[in-house]
Image (cartoon, rainbow, N blue to C red; front, side):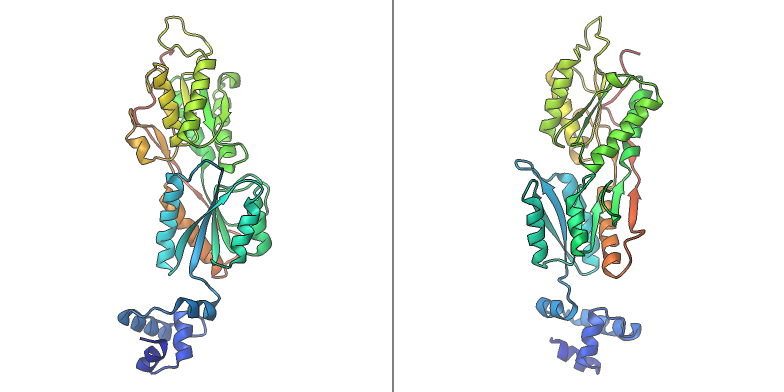
Length: 349
């Protein structure tokens, strides 16, 4: 059925039906509800091109992330997209995934994408402490919300997990188990999440009077391969012969990891060194992924309700698109530690 036929069946003008379906506020709530109910009853869908011409909106939102060459998007990004897509679908929007290359082409590619006017707004993942993508979106006047904060950009809408508290909790758990030589394998320091997670780690180390030199921080990719490589280096450099009767005082007894993927790689390195995860070396991850749950042993981790994060990103973006100012459009999500068998009491205590 055409919009003209729908209007005729309701006894109102085509323009009123069009404006009601497109959410214009000059149509009364009663009329809008009547039109929407009739359209739903007959399964009417506006033509996408006509809808775009009438409203200036595409009906699509892009979840954008940047990936280094040779790397790939992980389960966290997929869960974030899933949550955003659910919430956007309820508002009549599609969610698209857009991947940019890092490096000198990144901003040019983002600018080219924006020039196409293919979407009505952007959800930007994995922010940096000083993020040129945020600056570009602000310059272009595009509605956007970031997953993660920035430290040096102008204020903008964001949803973030409480990264600092997450790693304060993880590190304090290990300290409570008697560990005093704890390593932290983190993401790249220019990423906001990595900077905040390191703050939480160092806060716990300092608050409990641990020797910072005995608690090294290493940076790398948020992947199992990177976690395995860095953990192997830590094991070798800190003489972690945990089975020896006379243990080296510099040996590390626990590793806290910025992601579950890093933690799984670290666990592989520990096993390859002939050590037992959870007994001779404790490991804690972040993300509460399915892979961590089915690891051997199951991984102690931090849950951050990533699907809910995606829903909240979509909600804040819709509020912005509908005219709400960005001031106050921020949300800090809670985190929860999930104890499993990959960590345990320090054998030195």
